[in-house]
Amino acid sequence: MSGWIILGAAASTAAYLFALNKRLTTPDPSARDYVAPPISDDNLAKVTIPTPQDIADAIKAHGPATGKAYVVVGGSGLVGQYIARSLLARGETLVRIIDIVEPKVAANSDAVEIDSLSRAEFVQADVADYRSISDAISKPFGDTGRTAEAVIHTVALLRSFERLGYLKDLSHRVNVEGTKNVLRASQELGTVGSFVYTSSAGIFVPPANFLRLGMLGSGEGPVFGDDVPVNAPKTTNHYITTKLEGEKAVCDADGIKGILKNPGVNPTWGGKATNSMVNAWDLGRAHLQLSDALFDRPEDVAGQPFAITGESAVYPLSELRRMLQVGHTYL
Image (tube, rainbow, N blue to C red; front, side, top):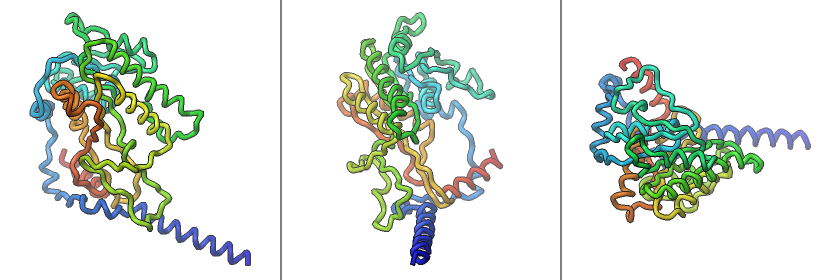
């Protein structure tokens, strides 16, 4: 009898793993309506790389330079760099990057280009140290005597696979206490009228359950526009929980507030899998537009979170791989 039990358990396990593999390598039916048609090799051959001036013109089309003094906390990271470059590209002259290390600039970058990070001021500081970040934010811009008027806070410690309680302090120190330090320093300065916080889409997008077979129906599907799954389960990893705490601190702040949620990423398997993407320049421009709106019409946007998304159409990973391979031939 025990042999039959073992055989049955083995068969059940094999059937489960087969079904799970099929689920993980097959797109959710709710995503099918958003899959874009393939792009031909001929059309890929026509793709050109925009120049810095092209980027600048596109950014200026959504609003001219304001002449305000901007501080990008975490400006050495990927998101922070594109925010700073977007500010420079549209003509802002008072741009400060605050981070623990200077931004790494590509060896082939041109320092005279309109979006060159060499045109921004760099101040080293640690968000976890209040005095350090306060001094960096309150420091006047050169001989202008002006201090920060808009602060964009992007710093985060991304330890998304940590769930054990004794490890939470590492993320909490940066994502919660660090955010509160930046908020406090901005408020106490007295000249900051716009505070934009880069949150995470993982806070409101239902996380994938990779052990679920999906036989009881699919999840809530794609999230677009103002559709927010109010019953979205929250993951227990320390990155998401501390980002949620940081976002709440910003929402509860008085006077200066605004939240942007970056697109989240879930690991996927198989060439048919799809994932929405957003251009880094659009990511940077979204931060600028919210900062501008906090000055121009705060009653419409203050204290509200906004999700940054790209186009609704998505490409399977196999198609993205082909596009990159073909595009590399021409570019």
